[in-house]
Amino acid sequence: FLSQKIAESEYEMRMEIKPTGVYNSKKYWEDAACQLENQFNCTVGSKLGICKSTHFSVFPLAPIPLIMRLGFLMGDKMRADVYQKTKHPDTWEWQSTELTNNFKVEEKRFESGAGVAIVLSVTAEIEMEAVLKVSSFKTVYILRADRQGDESIKSEKDLSAFWHKCKELCESLKGEEELSIFPSVPVSAAFEMGRRYMLGIYPKMVIYDRDGEFFETLTIGD
Figure 1 (cartoon, rainbow, N blue to C red):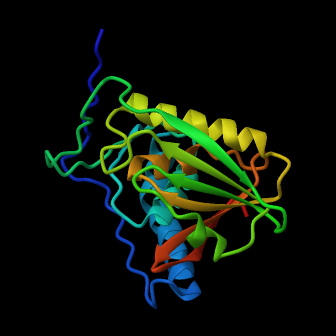
Figure 2: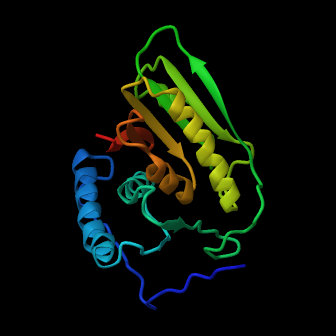
């Protein structure tokens, strides 16, 4: 049988994050993380305090690092579905019920350097030169979609395929202390990465964003 989720109210639970400072500054992201956690506790946290079985539908519009952090705060024990905004048509509805894309991982090793990076080239290709400007990594893993672009994830099956490829990669890197994450992903993928992160099992993830060049933003698992 088919079940239908019915909203308990016509009003959404809205979290608006308005950090101060320059976008690529440490102050901006510290402020953003603090606001997000406070609003999360006031909205989602208070709702769970009333009803532990609440099922959340998440419609994220924010910088990718913040969406990843939101997913981390919610975790996979909380009942939640995430949705993906599309431009054409202008809707939050999934555009397919089938698997429409494939994801694969490429490994690049370097003779010198230290640390491990994961490059998520899903909506767009990230140039290796831009990543290596941040640090001389010893290994870089590139998770790439066969079909890149805004419609790289069109269904829940696409989202599941993306996460399972991420999970395989994270499982193989359990012995690392830290992973540097360079994401070019849809919002649903960003949320799922944070939500499925296994604290104490996966390495700490340092998330980068780009404003011309990449810069450090938030951390998951610290």
